[in-house]
Image (cartoon, helix red, strand yellow):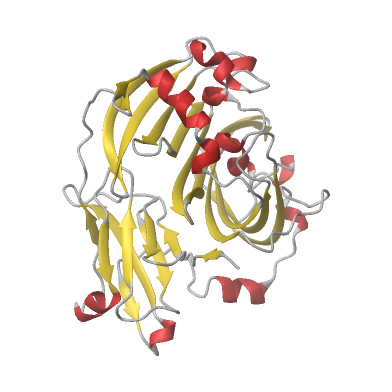
Length: 376
């Protein structure tokens, strides 16, 4: 059975190694820019030679378990636009420090001519190549994902916040034509008072997974709708690196958004995004999309020779009529992929609850086991 598992605990501390026995070590850390010491958000942290890893949060903070590792095991930290780092467990333990941060060196973004197989092409041509190479770079067969979501809703007036965590099962038919996705909410935990309970707002933890991963969209919406690609303005914004590969950075926008070229039922006032594409395999490794009041992002990483998503993000700005007036709320969702299964894949029932967090009872025993270190 091929399985990719990660442990996620969001903390407000720098690296801290606690040892009662080697099998119970947890490493908690923060990833920062080497030059300005700002957090590096959403970097990937993985054990070399395995499919185990995690991702940092928006503050660059992460926690990873060393339950199956040895002192010789090596951890690798990578992020688009930064030089990757590798550290052995033994070297970290010998530092004899209770707290410190990992400093990643940024790689400058350079302008360069586009070339594939030594043949110059336009940025739009490169997007066509990405779509044509999906069957080579992304898994074509069905697979399961387990996902961990943290949704935070903030009242723009009072700044009060409500948080809901979710664990979901996901079934994907593969990165192929008309491949579909299905999700099921397994566990939910709330923090604070539900600010939108009176309007019965649906938090929908899997929304970003569906809206951001357009390469697996059965309708090929937005920038990957090649029939309408000529309606987009696309330019090369630079060249950077990701996991030892050179990556093109393309920026795009739609001068005149429509239902057809955006894929949205309600046409957004603006529609623009950023694509990061490897020069070696023409694989999309990151996609940022701004569509009016909505933002979404997906980051991919290679496993078993194919690219799979490891992180989704999104935000939504909503206006509600409450207390005799209008109130604005911003909802942010970060979704980590916590398990990838390629064998013994299990479809989900069509009637699975994938969006209504209020219908899932709180399981205290599960959450104490799933997140043994309390999030602040």
